[in-house]
Amino acid sequence: MPLPKDERVYRVPHEPHNARSDVGSGQSDETLAIQSRDGDVKAFELLARRFENRLYSYALRMTGDRHEAADQAQEVLLRVHQSLDRYDPKRKFAYWLFGIAS
Image (cartoon, rainbow, N blue to C red; front, side, top):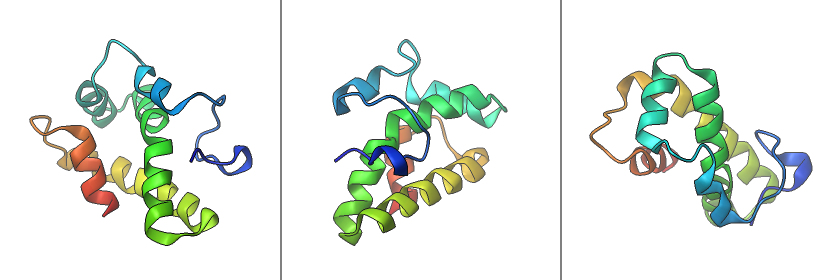
């Protein structure tokens, strides 16, 4: 379930879930994570767009509450951003991100 328009962590136009993976196409999640770690704000925004719906859905399954899920998704993105210096690009970014979310 996508975030309700008024609750999105990063406001973006509504797109089908599978279109999110095309955000910043041409660059892998891992490449964007490295660029984000090196201070590229745009790269992190692209990563956040790619994962915002999946994080929200995951949090919603865990909490059963839309508002709590939106808060948790935002918290995970904040923790990911603060932890990028510990990201190992040899690992899939999505696994690392959802490890933080767990």
